[in-house]
Length: 471
Image (tube, rainbow, N blue to C red; front, side, top):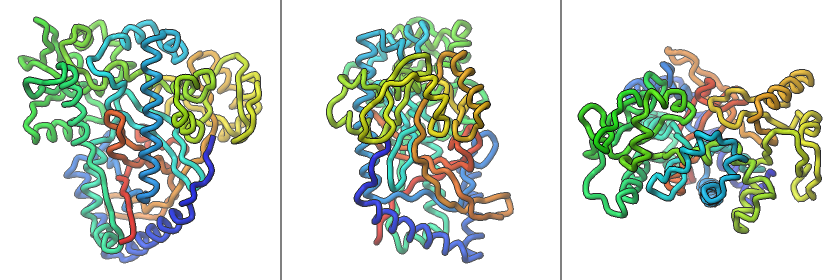
């Protein structure tokens, strides 16, 4: 479902190529490169831009995007988000859609609880590839998107690099700041939760499991909230108590839970740590994102969007955006379904499993409800026997998706190899990640990887995204 090349593709390619070549040319100055590495190294340490004990951004260049492309990306993301909100409304109205999304009975119970605000996922991240020929989404993180504060810190660091300051003499460079947008979302959800007017500033608890690699990001958020005059704490479900109709962390009464805890991580401990759920069910806290975020976090959401069976849910603009940017996706099971071999061609009906078996070079199998690149089988990287084994694994599991291959983006980046500043040019997969706040794109960052999984948990890195233009 790749869209045709945009009319601006040649202009975009020319601007980006010239800009990137110029940036790399600047790094040919050994003194400037050494000074930039030192600024990067010191900035990563100072800003706590660390994930699991390793630097999160071992690169000397950010990701550049043109103003024209950014406006297009923003418009597409917001249109797709409107369609996702409609899926949420339909799923709450008609429970059969929850079955199609792969919800367990416990998960169904969680999403039926009214969070006190309408938005399905006040914070979300759309993972995408932007090329000259297409703009395609591959996944959606609608439950608890990480990276917002990390991206802000990376933006501040990269803007101060000597090489970037030299580059900015020739090009206009604009970065993003997502933390203010996140705080605005928390406050807006709190006001909606309170009936439209909040009588006090909320006390915020950032809740997740203990000792996670994202702990540093929680500290960045806590410090940012405190800088704006708000009380904020970092805690785990084990630290919470529900008593007298209020949620407590020690003696502190919590109003807003910024939930970074994934449902899959909470379910195994829910009986021993019921306070969070009890407070949420009682309407004692405003939880952002709520358990309803699971509706759009399940990867099967793409199987809803791209299946003509559900096209009646969407308007003309949403259908066009889905057609152009959402990859064909189906729940992987024994059934007859519609496929399309090429854009503009009529759909044909096939036996899904047998068709998938014969088309490994253009398909991916992925679990419906996992993250970090776990359990994904990339058809074009497997031989026939390995693909057959992957198919059997997916069928036995019963909760897998099959998805068409999308055009991926690759660029060469100056990558730092060690702590003394050795670096070289390395081709990387480029995953552009727009961040949405109450359905509006307000920030972005870019994940880089040397393999097919542009995922930080799977060993990738990240850089800030900068919008550039000629001065």
